[in-house]
Length: 247
Image (cartoon, rainbow, N blue to C red; front, side):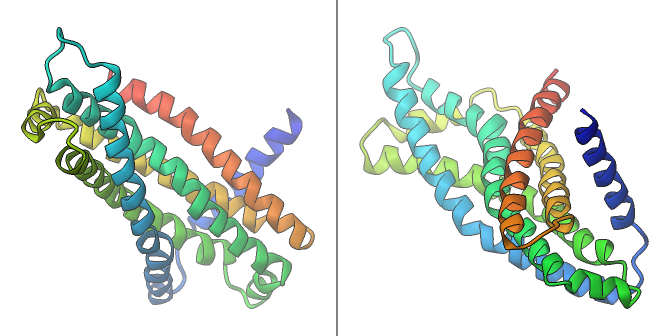
């Protein structure tokens, strides 16, 4: 318990340094653009690919597992939409990004720590926490809601693709189910949740990488710990936010 409280305290102290007022705005803006490209734009491909196939697989599973003469055919589209909007495109996709982006952040900062690049910044009077971590947080909070939107559309396209090319069901039935009793708040709820998840991924991964002590083996452990911690915190936050946003 004491170790956990100590870790939380160190995390909060690091976040206090991170959100200090930037010293040179132009320098931070250049770093922000770099992080958006490295962390966000580079993840578009994997998000679209996974979402496309997940949308198709969900449609297949629902079609063959809840098929009944008592159930309308458009139910498949309705359930697929609800799964994509409420959980997969926001929560599950952020868990996947925690593995890809979170480990990247922890490894990058950990390598900078053990090669004493961060120490060199501190000696030059640069707030290394703010310079290195703040652009990552802002970049992910900016980009991940966009990735969630892409994920929703890619999943729906995957559902239509399996209907058109897999001869699973009539695309018109799927379309009707996707439109049936549509609640636009579910999209906003997913985007709001993704903002919290983005902050968790960026800040927690940065904490584990920034506070590495030791050699290259510790960098690997920090990367693993960051992914595990981000995943647990995302699931916990998902439970709370889902209760608050859909109550």
